[in-house]
Image (tube, rainbow, N blue to C red):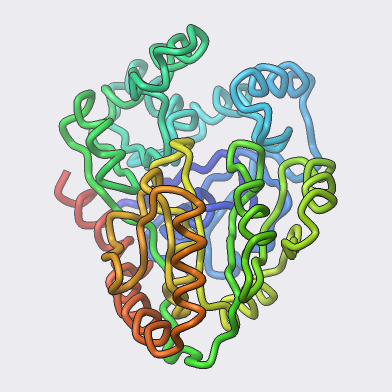
Length: 363
């Protein structure tokens, strides 16, 4: 596109939403506006970006906004705070066209549309508009009708990370496009990997790490590594005491994470309907020749073919059975690892950026 795109990100931290926004900014003629910086180790050398609030800075509204955020996402820690004060300040700083990463930053686009008649675009990573979620809680209904639905209904186009999410969203917005997150497929994968199961995420209670811990306890032929930051470090230490068989890395550098990708054989991820996206760690694992094993509550199931390039299972016990079988059959393991790697070549960051760019240029 000829005019520079504004990509708006609420929090710059180690997580899937940030990775997607950064990789888009790297590949599309755009400027990345970050509302708040948190701990991260991204290389932003080639990215045109601006940060409104540096790491460690707070405003007088921060304690209240942290409290309000915790009513909905208490397990994600204080760094997940929705900075409404920054959202409102950003209304005057954005230059269209703009792509907002999540419905909260999308409030900026919604306000600008009401004030100036500007169109806007939103990438929805997860949403509460599914009636199966909202029927249980009046507070979620309030948030859904005050934020998710207005932002989604008024956007010119919605991008999202899975067909599952698309089905939920499209009843509120006809222009809903799936743009799967991307990865960097290795030129050549290690075919002599160890009997290691790797699980990568930003860990909180909602992601139920106890199920991975139970698998680590029962796995007879291999080990389970749980990699990534934890929203609550006290909870991480509690988990480590309860499940000593699981190898927990805590916050980990990109270099160390890629060492794990190079040695592990299986990438494991369960969803609990806390999100419908594929889980970025699953894609990165496949790009490094790891066999994905996921459950039916994760969007990654959309590009996994059972017994060919991975497994979609019903629960952790079935996952454990699959892992034991894979670890007892080296030939099968190598074949499926190669198939997973080949599939990842269809899901690159360049392909992701092309989908976004092509649709923005035609709308």
